[in-house]
Image 1 (tube, rainbow, N blue to C red):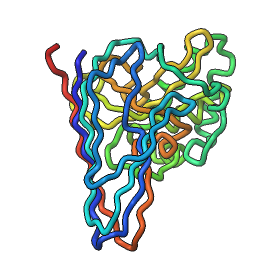
Image 2 (cartoon, rainbow, N blue to C red; image 1 turned 60 degrees about the horizontal axis):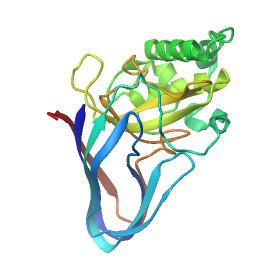
Image 3 (cartoon, one colour; image 1 turned 90 degrees about the horizontal axis):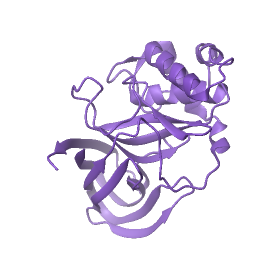
Length: 269
């Protein structure tokens, strides 16, 4: 499938700030499941900095915007040819050992409910079967409800509320998988539509779980499926903050207001 992406993140400040510095994980890597044909990232009034690829194979780039400035726009456009790999990540160059993703973080710490889910797969001999079961149980435990949670919501809090968004599903799945001894990581990216073909938030997130013999396998508990050719993988990390497409620091007292518009479309090849 040939997918196009138009993604604009706009920062507005109630008073001019002295400047800002950002680190972007906004450029997808080509692998067996996706081939990047065109990709461009621009920052209004921005000065590009260094670019490097981290141990997880993700491309990171720095930007500086000198002030005073009251509005900054980060624009991403691109075309990616995707292929359904049944969730298996192949052809992705990385160097970080999978066991590094067994460590938990504040958003991915288990509670009693997540421990109970994790314990259901303790006797499983097949890690792939265990990962599928964990994903299904998390999807059943947390109803997909836009606006029900915030960016700071933890997996435990989402489990208590029994509702959340894709970030919460990914955090909860990671918590359960790690407790069961399966390395897991958070993945940010784009999604054309949900499993039924209905409209969905185009900026999306899911989890990858390490399965010996297969490697990293993606699981989207929010949509009860593995990533296919409707997905574009951007980057990964221990949790949502670690894998955030944009991270930065602003210099000045201005209050920040954020607007994000993302459109993913399928086009005729």
